[in-house]
Image (cartoon, rainbow, N blue to C red; front, side, top):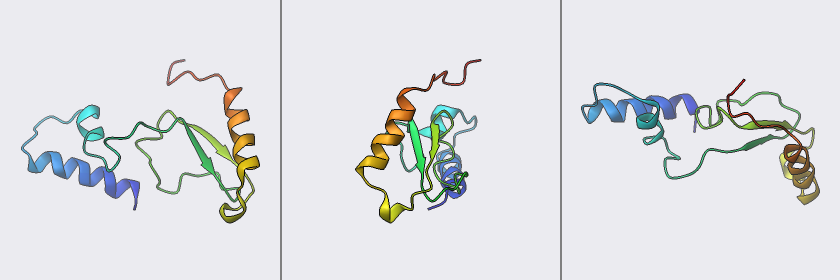
Amino acid sequence: YGARAEIVDAVNSLLRDGVREVSEEAISGRLYTANLPDPDLVIRTSGEMRLSNFLLWQSAYAEFYSTPVYWPEFRKADLVKALSEYQHRERRFGAV
C-alpha cells in the first residue's frame, strides 16, 4: 500500500470511466477506503513524526498523535493516553 499510488489509481479509474472534470468527492469515492469514514485521529508509533505515505488524502483533517512506544508494545493504556490527549484538542476541521 502507498497513498500516492492509491490517489493515482483513483484518478486513473475516473479517467477510464470517461470523467472529464475531477472533484474531491469523485476521488474520495474511488479510494481504497471509499466506504469508510476519514480518520479523526492518526496514531504514529515509534516516535515517528511523519505519515510515511499512509492515508494522505484521508488524513487531511485528522489529528496526529506520536508516541515513542513501538507498535508491538502498544497497549490499551497507550491507546487511552492517545484518546485522552485527543479529547482535549480543539478541532477546527480546516477553519481558521
